[in-house]
Length: 227
Image (cartoon, rainbow, N blue to C red; front, side, top):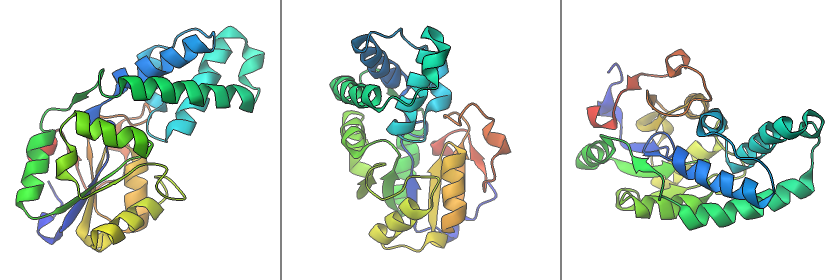
């Protein structure tokens, strides 16, 4: 690993695709939502490239995808009334099943333990709503590792904007150049680069359907345990 971790004092860790494989949760909640709206289901493989930019982007993308199958003309319509109903039903279903169809990736607990043993301060920063992120971390036994947890609604802007990373560094009391970003997508890498944080990405997560090897990072990890 080319990154010199001797100068690292803290780590900001992404959630979906980095610590927890949540694609099953997304599929269950989204298909429950679609059924409530009288729309056909969506395959998990179609959902995966849509994950990572926040729930608003996810829902808009899913509705566009499904409506295009029903009626191509409808897919181009910006129907805010439908979106509002979809958001309400999505929240209902996601909170009901949160964590039931997801699993912690191998090596995550070992990696978090290693970072703790080094004395690093740890924060979880995700574009997932905070109301979804906190129960998921608790359900998977990961909440105790983090002194701070920030969801996509915690700040004015989401990753790939650098603001959430800068705010998280401030909350941790660390400088960006000494705070490692650990994620799975170009959203994490772009945010880290703009904030001045070193960044490592895992090779197994969700990167909008693109190869993670093409992203500008300080290195790739097959497992957080390799830290």
